[in-house]
Image 1 (cartoon, one colour):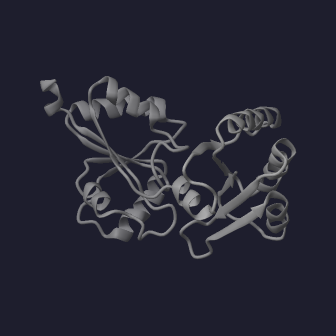
Image 2 (cartoon, rainbow, N blue to C red):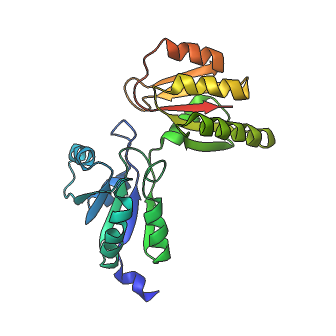
Length: 232
């Protein structure tokens, strides 16, 4: 265990999902004192850091789904050399439908300290504003793109909800939102739905109601950006 004091530390830093004011003072302090910051998109992260006018910027290193496995060994070596390293996603809390889980698992195996710097999350932001019961919820992330796998997953969700009623949270592309809602309707019949888009941004919208009403409402609008679908 003495080895720990010579190792670095991995910080999982939450960043805003839209409104740039939604960042914690602790996150800004950590970001100012890192040696390296792992980013899904270094250009987007550089723009975000420039907005906060931090006194010191860490070295930005790309870390995304396609290079995660290759980059992992390099990051572990940096940590073992005592580097302080942060991980951010393009928006929100790292690891939630974003890369980083494998790295965290390896850090735990190597007894490298991992610290979460909590903050914005589309999951919780959508849940609390949806008007649907927040006491129990199931986060699915993105459904499979293939229709057969998507149908099987929704059927399994229906079975689970029959045993334990809860609000279900799904990430979806705006181009597939109506199609996904129609599939949900065919499997679960009558459900109450909320669809959130542009959360924390200027044109934030939450569409609530029966699944039929929500589908008709969405058809009349041109959705932009990723949306969150909640159902109960």
